[in-house]
Image (cartoon, rainbow, N blue to C red; front, side, top):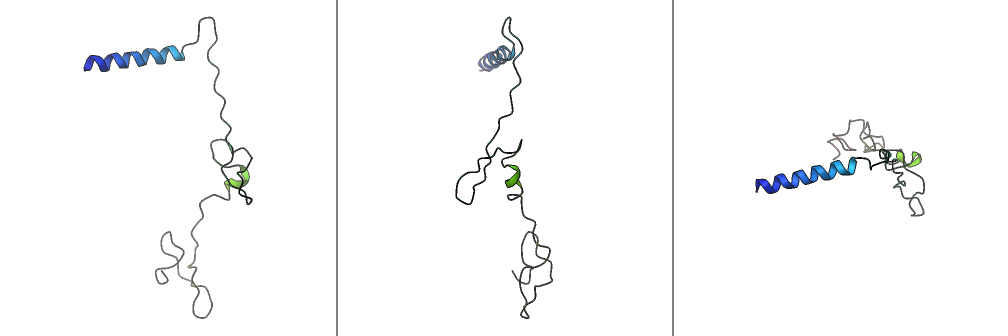
Length: 101
């Protein structure tokens, strides 16, 4: 069992070394270009956005701000009987205070 594992490990190591080594008479491999990705956003018409995503992100400049995580409100979203907004702080990660949950 150990011999088989060692043989496979040696084979993989040699295969990796051969793949990374430049060919005889050739130059070193060229660095890969970063792949340009299409924006993942969907437009109002239902089609996918045609712009290119920002490097390292999924969305273009226009849509990256629209899909950003929303901050919870600083004040409870419930209305009092008098028609005013509740002044209590909302519960952790919620839109309403513990009184209005």
